[in-house]
Length: 131
Image (cartoon, rainbow, N blue to C red):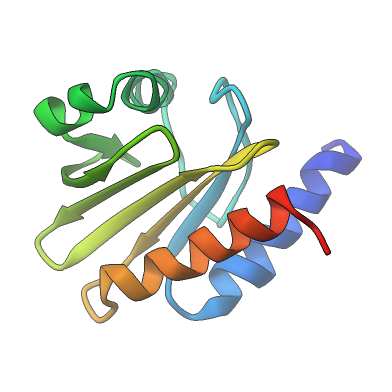
């Protein structure tokens, strides 16, 4: 675990999991080649990483294929070159690209996707433009 990973783990633990909106969260490298930090037991496979990278390159692909993270497939409800949102029943996944990393957060049925997304989007804004 390098110093960078420890910083990302802090974001996972305090900013994402600490928000109370998510039951699983992780941070990917900026090029989506690997997982830098995650909550316990949240794994994203190499195939899933490739799928996320492809979805950011071609958001239309996300609309067609859905978003698969942590072994679960989600129906795409938002896809552009910054943000991917998916739903599976009332559960949801929010994936947002920052300049230095990619945030991934999963919320359970008791949380509204827009509220969950706001937490991640604001965190990415903060990372992109620290005050």
